[in-house]
Image (cartoon, rainbow, N blue to C red):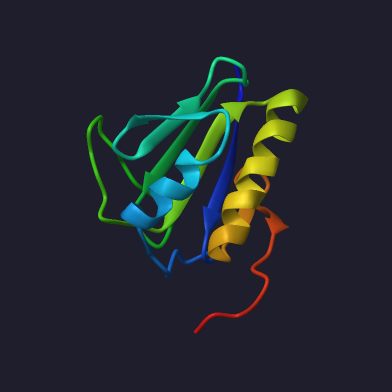
Length: 123
């Protein structure tokens, strides 16, 4: 299986954080996603395979996350799913919803394509 990655972030330097306690309730309200670990969500049975992680990464976007790990603040919401049209169509919609909620951007990690830009500048 090949994978596709969508990243929700404030900017390419991962320079803005969100409190994880503010992000989890937003994602918990999205139909089709199940909270599986402290900073991890997965698809419900009715949706294509997905792992959604809430992480604190460095300025290059690198991170590691262990089972049970919890980040007080995050600067990346990462979607990993199968590289097929059904999965992409399903998860780009969800990624856009989350990005708009926090005024962050969505980037396709494979080709660095900006899919959603921030709607307004935040200082």
